[in-house]
Amino acid sequence: MTPTTPPTTPSSPSTPSSPSSPEVVTQALLDLGSRPEHPFTTSIEGGRIVFTWVYDKASGPFGSREQSYRLRITLIPETSEYKRSEIGVERQRGSVRGSYTFNSAKVVGPVKRTLEAHGWHRRRTPLGKAIRRLFS
Image 1 (cartoon, one colour):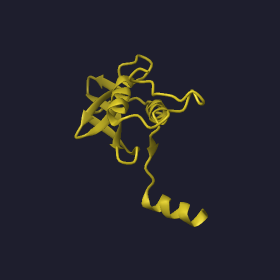
Image 2: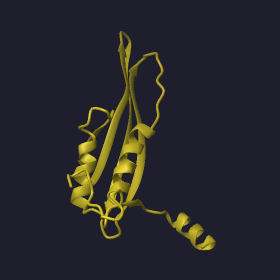
Image 3: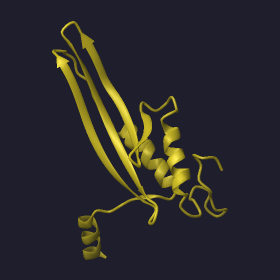
């Protein structure tokens, strides 16, 4: 077992025997930002794990522009759940032309797979919980 690989049971090699500790999950998520195949950086801000991807950075004679995407994960250790929030940020000075296609799956995908591999799941909203009760 490494910080990015959760413990497994002999009967199910890809499923963790129990959710990994918050410390192990945090380290696994932080390690994602140091891998060259991922376009983002990771940090801890106010108890949250933050993934930042600067996907458009342009400058010219008349100004500059930077567009970024931030995914924030808050771990809830009592229930092995997490909350997710997303923020798009654009900073522009002057006039800069150009376009860029953005896909948040390049950040969300690896994060979600890592959390699932460690036995953590997304916290349901109150509305989602109510709908589930209606249909169960």
